[in-house]
View 1 (cartoon, helix red, strand yellow):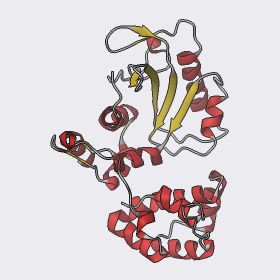
View 2 (cartoon, helix red, strand yellow):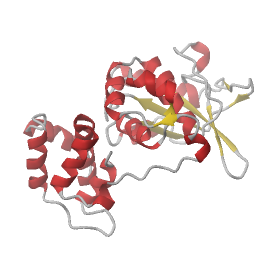
View 3 (tube, helix red, strand yellow):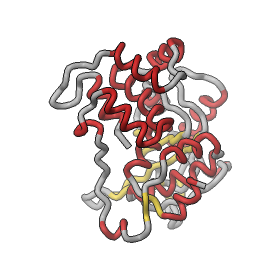
Length: 271
């Protein structure tokens, strides 16, 4: 599947060796031929959610590639005249031992359907946690629904082993909602409370999978919905002294392009 991040940079004139910016009107005309979804109103909305030309292109192409499938996405790249060295995705190398243990990349169309239909627990347990495991995070075990003793996290803190022999522990909160900048409704108030509970409450000593207690070194929100640009900054304002980061639908789809998953996980996602 072509990489919308790289292509977005190329169209914006920011991809080495820094091609000239693409003709935006030509881009919109080609996109309109591929999908009736991209009306002037929809394009205007996408523009308000993107703070750079490359992000504007990436948001449109990310959706279109999933809708068109791999062959359709490649044809769109050809219609746009994107050089192969730009559109080609370069996955992170997987050791031979991993490839021999029956792992494969999951179909992105199936992932997109799963993200829309799965509830919060299924999203976390059946897709994200297996992905985090393949990324090398340790100590992964899903809590399920939050209870009073969780202090704002949905699972045992994920453990990251640093090369110098130091471990970092990250609290994770799963969501099934769009992460919009400036929203102040019930969902935001709930997330803000969870973040404060996880990082600022004096009693928030989290228990790891091996039973030991620790305080979190950082906090991550992973949602099956879209994440707007600027949301990370809004999140950081809650606890400016801590590492916090949010990931949305586009990030999860990108992870699925890079990390093969065990066959039993792939079968569950692809139905």
